[in-house]
Figure 1 (tube, rainbow, N blue to C red):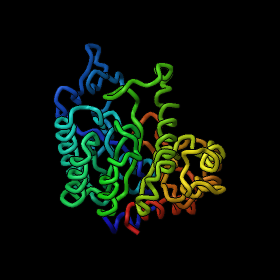
Figure 2: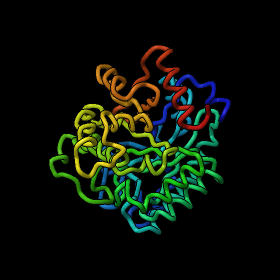
Figure 3: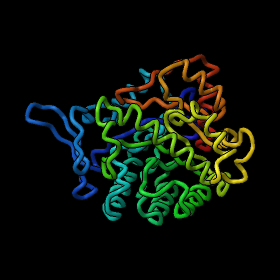
Figure 4: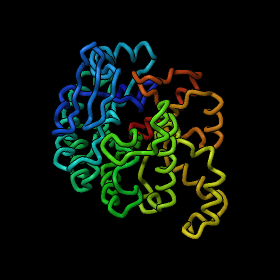
Length: 333
C-alpha cells in the first residue's frame, strides 16, 4: 500500500462503500437491501427506507466494478469509508458495536482485494466512547485500517469532555478522523421538517451540520486540548468559508469565547489545523475556499459512485498538491 500511495497522482478520500456481509448485523435496524414488486431497489436502516438507489451490481458493492470505474475517473488510490446511512450512532450499543466490528472486518477484506489501490477507514460505535476507542485500536492495529470515520451528529457535542479519551486515542495511534454528515432522522433525532423536500436535508442540511461541527471543535477548545489531532471535514466544511467574518467576530466579542480566540483572525487561524475535502462542484466556490482556507489542507474528495460524484479536474500542479496533502493527512509522507 505505502509504495502505491506514495506514487499516486490522485488520492480520493471521499468514497463510501456498502458491504453485503454487514447486512442484518445491527439487529432490527438492519441494514437490509431488497427490491419492490416492480423491481425497484430499496435500502432499509431501522424505520428509514431509501427508495430507488441501487447498491447491488454497482461500484458501491462490486470491487471489480469499483476499480474499473476508478480507472475511468482517473483515480489512482481511494480511501474507503462507511456509508453515512449506516453510522448507527443512536441505536443501542450492542447492536452498534456488532455492526461496526462486522463492517470493519469485511472492509479489511475489500482493501486486501487491491491493497495497491485501496485503504479503509473504520466505522465506530460513538454512543459508547470506551467501545469506540477499543474498536478504533483493533481496526488500526489488527485490521490495518488507516483512520476513523464518524458523523457530525453522534448524540453528544463534539467538544464534550466525554470525547477527550477518543481524541487522545486518535493521537496516540497517530491516525486521522474524518467527519461527514448523515441525513437527520435515520437513527437519531428528526431534523427540520423544511428539509424533507427537494433533498434539502442533503443539499443544505449537510452544510449546516459540517459548519456546526467545525465551529464546535474550535469554539469548544478541542484543538487546544489536542493540538496534534488531525480532523478532515467533507464538502470544504460546509458554510465555514462564507461565515468566516462572523465567526472571527464572535471569537473576539462573545462572552463565551476563550482567551485564545480574543484576537483578530483567531478563529481563522484555527482552520489551518483542520483538513477539508474539495468536493464542491464549482470552480468559483473552490477559488473562494482556497482564498479563505488556503490549499495546504485541502484534499481530493469525489463522493465516488454517488449521484454527485465529483469529476477530476485541474492541472497537474493542483492535483499533485491535493495528493501530497492527502499523503500528509494519511501519514504516508
